[in-house]
Image 1 (cartoon, rainbow, N blue to C red):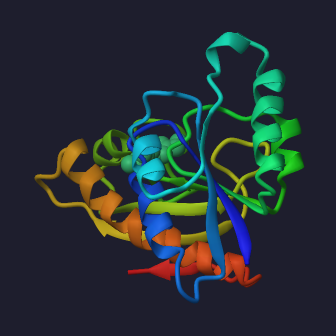
Image 2 (cartoon, rainbow, N blue to C red):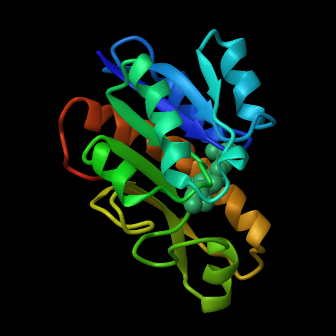
Length: 196
Ligand code: GAR
């Protein structure tokens, strides 16, 4: 049984989708929910479910990202984590940290990568006039929103979609995709999951 840490910065709806999936015959269990922001709504939701939580505030570390990540690494090690899932974790990670977790750290991104890396993906998808948008789960490498794709789910963009309505439609798919990918990944199966 793989031990999973979920790293969040906000509401944690993807974290909750992962946690809800990790029961019964699922090959992984949530061992830690960690946030860089003590006000992240997801922390309380996780704690209410009896999951261990931790806060590593990035602010006292200033520009010293390596020291911030060393503090995260300590938490991950003491929780004996096998797999890290980034789920709305809004800090950019250094090469050193991503190398430490190479092949064992996943991220969910709200676009069909390699399209729309970075922020404001829904606004940019609408501005570009793409007919289809969606979300991607990928292995984390040193390059931002890069790395081998483990799964994607697609969403049709309607003519009257706003960034908000599109974000909501994509989020519904994120909640389906991330657990499906994690299940396969935790079983050691690297074939990507494509959801319609
Ligand atoms: C999700 O849409 C996730 O894809 C996105 O943040 C949201 C977090 O929502 N992640 C990124 O933009 C990463 N660059 P949640 O806290 O409700 O899961």
